[in-house]
Image 1 (spheres, helix red, strand yellow):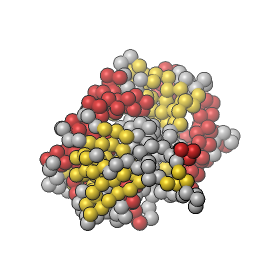
Image 2 (cartoon, one colour):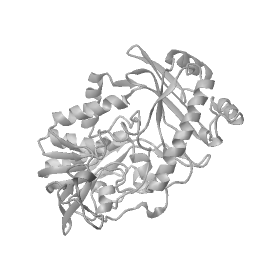
Image 3 (cartoon, helix red, strand yellow):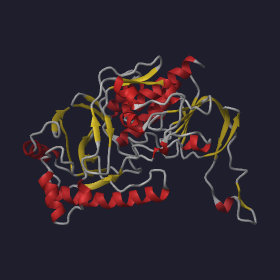
Image 4 (cartoon, one colour):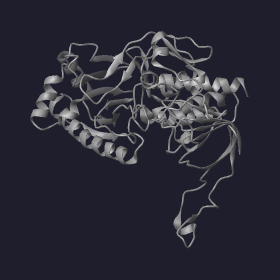
Length: 435
């Protein structure tokens, strides 16, 4: 099988690459380990896509996704932000977009082999069918003979690692930047349904007069809202007394109140999405033992937070947990060493580049497990160069998403969905130009 572009990982950035290249006539394949596309939006329930300013570039895919979701009833514009999406309908919207762009998609795909020639990836192979022990040959030394379950080699001009953790690049022994021993806490999002949104909205805007923390708006005849609280003392949060009372009564653990943020969801008029719990234990996002612990701790925190909402928040009395994310919210893990390492000084100075793939003003947003230690710093408009998406080890390997070549603090501003969309489109345009 021969392609122009093979994208490993069908999340936000990977889909943007694939759709943009495909709609321009390139032959494109997505290899996705899960059973649907969307990554953080769908598996991680990460909504909304954050607002990144009025001068963004390479927004083609973002606009296409907005249009597709609007037609499905899964998008709204709230507080001047068009990125309020329905996670479940996003799965369907992305399928539709890939079909329109003639992009091939293989789900549950695992790369089993690859061939390298000097600084070029020549081909890769994937498992062609699920392992079925009764039907596959076992050698006497208990080693599975999988010679009959490998696909034919997949060749491409360009390979894109959009796995988030740089899993494909790790297989290729690429150099990384994550040895700075820095991380951000992981999260596990969830949804509660059966909420009386009208009752809650009326109560919360009266209870919390801070419009930087709490907002409501009627959109297409439905009430939409957001509110937040953290345990940081740098801001006086209206919800603070409720959380402190719940901790004193044993309804919540103190750690449960470290970060709390909730939103309404497009097309789900009785549901609320939670951007929490944030898991504050120092765990490694690249360790299966640590991520397994994070999932368990996250789910225990979710049941406590749900009980808190039912007891303390009017409108939640009959609410219930309707969805828990299938994947952790990982803000940073591996970052590849690219042809250009983008720095926080580049970002804060607004440095201009010959080949920018994005323009944004999203703040430097670095979460911390410690009180009063997170960073949310507003900055001037900045650019990211194409060279930060290029592997320093291979001439035809590129990365998009949170695993780009950027230092720890700069990555904290670049990891949000609209920037990932722009990265993907900008990279695809490079492929189109150089096919």
